[in-house]
Length: 271
Ligand code: ADP
Image 1 (cartoon, helix red, strand yellow):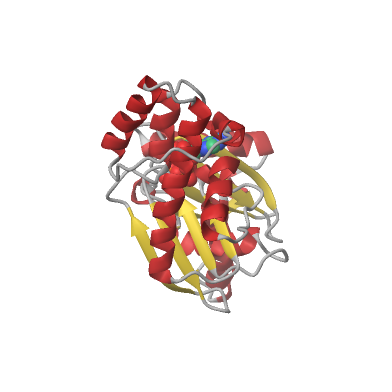
Image 2 (cartoon, protein in one colour):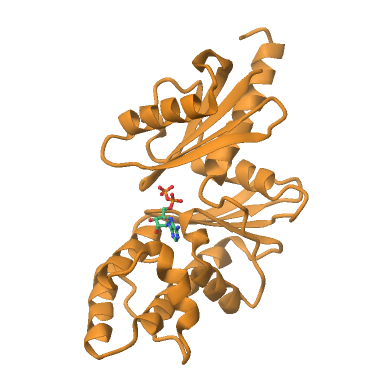
């Protein structure tokens, strides 16, 4: 059996997806990127292969994507996150949702991607200049509130009144604003929901740049945060589709492309 690997070396986490010849996901892993992208990505792949009992030589084609993709020298191909995200989203939503708009929030950026009826990327918009509205911002908020990033969703749903407004558009000032709100005895849950609504408003502005077309799909690590999903849905007035493993979909897209490239180059006699 041949296997194909997608490695998404993101700013915050390294995600790896392995698929088989029928494009079934056979395994995946999520590890911190740390400061040594290549070393950690290599170790994460070796660990995953040994856990799945797959020999190195059976992993016949690897596609790398993400911020650190250029550093992964063993990759057979390197592709942009936009392409990998679009392919992975289609694969993750196959049979469930006909995606036209992708929202992706990562560790250090956020993106909106518009697809045509065939699923090709027709337009995209990206915020990679400012931490507000990214996973990193949520990490800093959680740290200031002394809760885990995976608890933000739970706190969001505990909030009763109207969400507090967070007006600062810069993550650094927003952090001071949150500390000020804590000092004024505001409840953690109300601050959390205020943060989610402020991110939702920013991301919707980004999505409007490419056009909001149904169905809308959301992935990246912050899509695991049900409170943020709730805020985006309420601000949009529409339901959004979240895949089962929203943090690994870009890696999955790279793996799908790896299997297609392998078949193509083999049929051309180049492998
Ligand atoms: P990148 O590709 O840029 O490394 P990811 O898509 O991996 O980014 O997203 C990383 C972000 O996901 C983290 O900064 C964190 O805010 C968020 N995240 C990760 N795990 C969870 C979780 N269990 N619940 C909520 N948010 C999470």
